[in-house]
Amino acid sequence: MLIPKEPCSKWLKTHLGEFYKPDICKVFLLDFIDDDFKIDQLPDLIKKYYERMFVEMLDSYASKKYWPEITYETFEDWFEIKHDAFVNDLGENAIKSLNDE
Image (cartoon, rainbow, N blue to C red; front, side):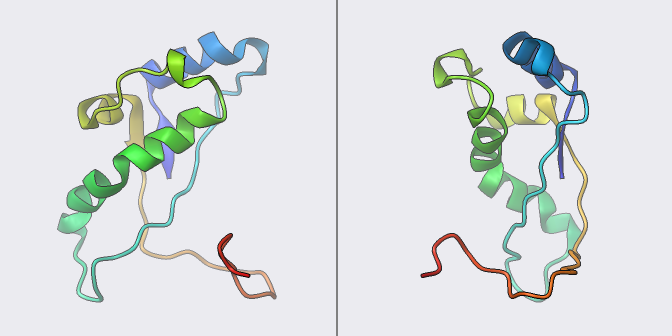
């Protein structure tokens, strides 16, 4: 789960104004490297996906011309990461990708 830290919250308040909600966060499912994935490999996995996660967090809130420079350092300054290896699907239907036909 990606949770905005103060710099991101400040940016969001600036661009969302009265529509800003302090509990904005997003959940991302990432591919494990293999079944032997160890938690100490998480930073490498985050580095692989940080740009996509950053874009997902900002894209629905403001035009790209207002975005900060997207770097790993900015990502770390702007977001707290909470992780877990398990997601429980309580739905009765199969999970489908947007790419599924």
